[in-house]
Amino acid sequence: MACVVAIVACNKIERTRYVSDGADGAVDLTAIMTGEADGGTSSGRGCSMGLLACGGQCVDGKSDPINCGTCGTVCAGNTVCSQGACVCPSGQIKCGDLCVDPLKDGAHCGACATACASPKVCSQGRCSDSCSGGLTACAGACTDVASDERNCGACGRSCAAAEICAEGKCGCADGLDKCGSGCVDLSNDPKNCGLCAVACAAGTSCSLGRCATNCAAGQTSCLGRCVNLASDPMNCSVCGVRCTGGAICSNAACRCPADRTLCGGVCVDTDASNTHCGACNNACAAGQVCDQGVCTVTCGAGLTACGNACVNLTNNIANCGACGVRCPTGLVCTAGQCACPSGTRCGNSCANTESDPRNCGACGTACGSMQVCSSGACKMMCAAGMRLCGDSCVDTNTNRSHCGACGTACAAGQVCMGGACRCEANLTLCDGVCVQTNTNRMHCGRCGNACLILFKCNGGTCRPGSEIDPVRN
Image (cartoon, rainbow, N blue to C red; front, side):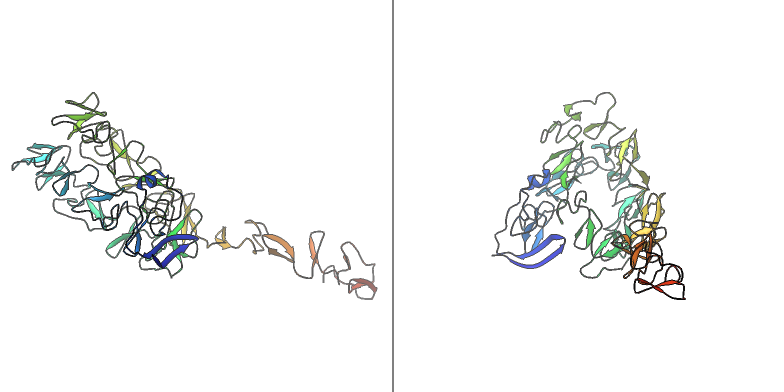
């Protein structure tokens, strides 16, 4: 019997840790991939849907390299766990115990065990005297030093584990900041919220760069990070469920992009894949290339042979403009140039300059830790229940100058309660003015009951007297 030892929650259970008795429940990975899971709240000893209970913790069995598909199944070598199976990353093939890129691996050029004799190099799957397409020869392999994290800017220059190589320089991906030795998202990292080393207290989450009790609308707290479960590839539909193998998170389900097909746990282009030409596992013979889903000897009009695939250099993200020129993640290849499908290209990523706090109004214009980007301008970020009116955060439920809405001011003698202007205690609204009917000569005892000249209002009754009261006492 499993015992609950810890629960992390914010509005709903996100991750539950269990001490397992060894009988781990199964999870329908296909249902998770297609968004057709049974709708229950658990899979395998009460973990959130899509997670497995392994070694006292709930893990994502379709992406965890040490619990791939089932508990204890470790992905060896440089294989990755995708959809519950240990597979080679997209574009690589398995040769022995290693996953290699046959387009540039000098020991496995074009096919396993096909080695290039020195000084030849492996260029686009063929042993050649030199590299093509602007690539550089590094240790017998042709690589793009502008994006290769093991040869960034020059052969042998490796980026740190958390960094990427962009334009020949190692650094954090756009949208991330360097804190210590790691790259983090200051907008939702509970250990670096808004600024490096600013940690959120227990029971709070990092939302939009600020520690808060509750996440912003449309977001869910996953281990202290406020994320959108409908689109976050690291927390797709459920906290901890990762999309792998080139899949994206769309409508709370891991799916292949529209132009890719899921083959063996990896999203592939069946129009150009020599291993999956036209359909999964339909491999082309030696000497053939995959041309629009058909194995052939030569490429058709408008296509170029890049390795063993016929591709359109005008729209192929892995060969954009030339063989081997890969567009950064999130960009598409248009007319042979890497570009954003929407928004503005800022460095190697796409940004919505109307709402991106790191590129607000223009690339590189960053908002402060307590600001948000709205309509291309940095504005103060208000706490939950508050609203930005002008340059101030106010509570429109109680603010007399902004009662119910910005700019709606309450009259003299009125207070703002529940977003509506009301008279203060012991006052009555008469002709749009709050008055004291116990002493007011124009509204003595009730609205509209005016006392005669030389009469005063005392206790809500008009009485003779020499003192003429002011209209409002």
